[in-house]
Image (cartoon, rainbow, N blue to C red; front, top):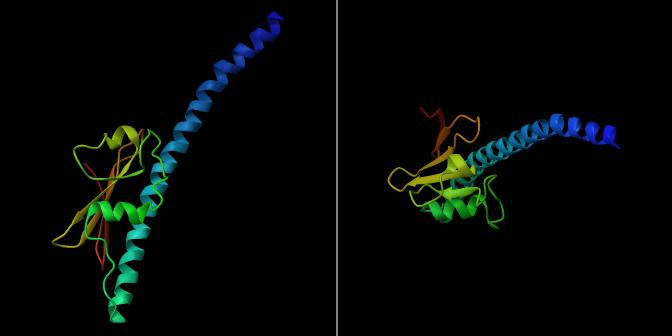
Amino acid sequence: MMITVGIIGVLAAVGLPAYQGYIETANMGKVNEAYQHAITTVQREFSKDTTRAALGLPSTIPLDEAAWVVVLDPREQSVAPGGGRIYLVDSESNPDPNVTGAVTVKFDTETGEVQIHRPSYKSLVAYTARITRNSVDITKDT
């Protein structure tokens, strides 16, 4: 019986850190996947809107951050690794994205630029993608 308890203790001592590392890696992957999804979705929305304009149809581009968040997560079901929604409006009142892993969205009404920010969650480096109708500029935050 003591030998069995000892073996279980050794396995737990070795397995728990490995499991925690796996969970951390999976959570960072979730944040990065949400960031990449946001960039692709914004580009697709701009492309669809350009096609609509060429056909003489009215624009359907969201005109504020909250509307972009709805486009990115229409069912509001995606959850950040640290809790809460995975996409948030870039705001002071939101929880710290570096803690929750939430991807933030900012929209400049004057230029029509959408900024998607990947937080420095765990060991991820923070990046910001600035997307317009004609370009995508991704920069590492300093």
